[in-house]
Image 1 (cartoon, rainbow, N blue to C red):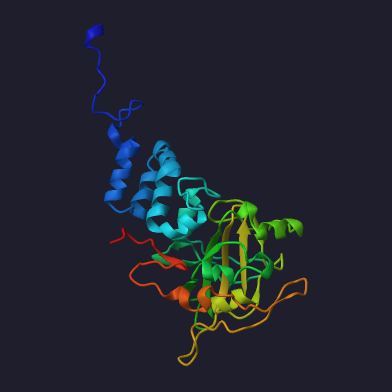
Image 2 (image 1 turned 90 degrees about the vertical axis):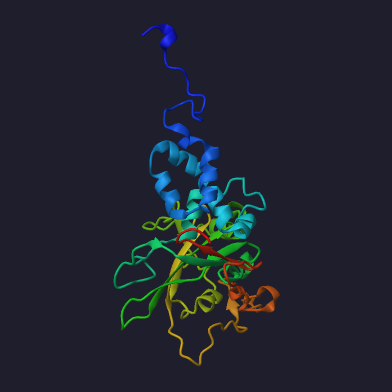
Length: 300
């Protein structure tokens, strides 16, 4: 073959570094995922094809999926700049939004058998609920918490609730400052199921307020949760069965006592004074207090 018969570059190719057509072109990928409304499962398959697509997904696609699926929550977590960085990465946040991490026995929480993780068809994250997981000294932090994912454990046991959450700007949070000041050690056995980093047991740190159990509908002291260095939270609780004449939401004024002996007389200090208002979302709409995140298939 002569020099002038050498193969010429394809002018229609968007990727000059490979012969894999335009599949690696970021603009094309964005248009494709926009057309299928950021289908979670398709994105997972795409990211598993090869290392190049995995890198594009990690840098670009997971962020756009998070923004599309939970725009208000992402705006709050990213301080209104969704194109910026976020603790643990956008792929970890996406996993936290859509994946129930399951449960195994820990030092402070025993289960009769392990519960495997799974994709959640739908989850609701609420910053109002998040306030119930913060002690009085840390109420200035912003924390989104999901409703518990309920797992039946048998006729002779209560249902197991598994929940997850995420802090905004955890590196600058009052919660992290408390953990560092008290010199709380990392848990030796547990790692964050979303980013793989080390975690603090909030039970060991004595930073679990009574309002957390009330919010979950769980008996006091029958719950546990962990927070990792990137601000991801995951935890478990036992859920008390409700009879037909019991209130689903009961956040009456009950005193919380911090470990330094100071009393929190504000109860849950609900936004707008409505303890149940975080559940007033229908048809996938959002309020200022929380957001529904659908994970099973594309959004209609």
